[in-house]
Length: 173
Figure 1 (cartoon, rainbow, N blue to C red):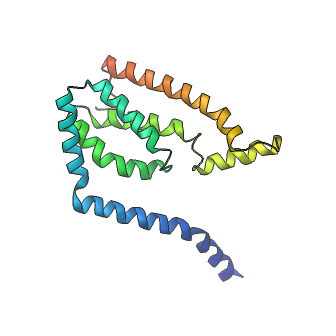
Figure 2: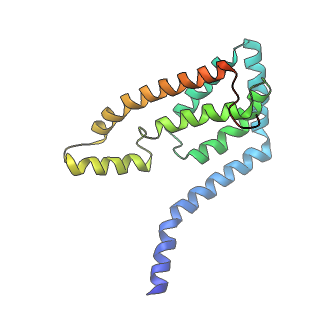
Figure 3: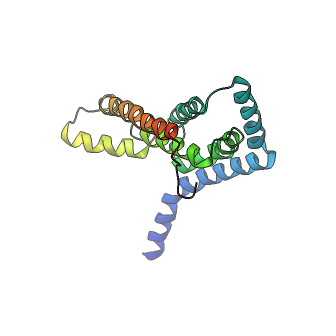
């Protein structure tokens, strides 16, 4: 019985292990080709040529991360892809790493509740259907999207005020 239970436990982990293997391969090629460094340097040069202010760059990063989160729902996987590009790119523009991470965390967290690819979305739909049997993805989305948009705007506004005030985003920063 114990062997059967152990096999079932490992069997349920197989899809996650395959996903992690694919992500690990992608990240290894990303590092091996140094494409992250190339993208960071070219991105920094492009933004410097545009003479974009720091707040506008951070707003653009937040918008980009928000839309990326609809496809890549894992915060750690998204950070593993975005950090090697955005951190050095913005450091070349004199934007500290902790500021970039704060913008990332805001953009990533808000869209978790509205992306149908998130396991929590499915869980919330299940809870919702306990009380309203006819509820579907559209019903849940119609409830969560307006809240997510308002929270995104409020958090980004607070972030921009914090950034404009010059207060550091982390201890020792």
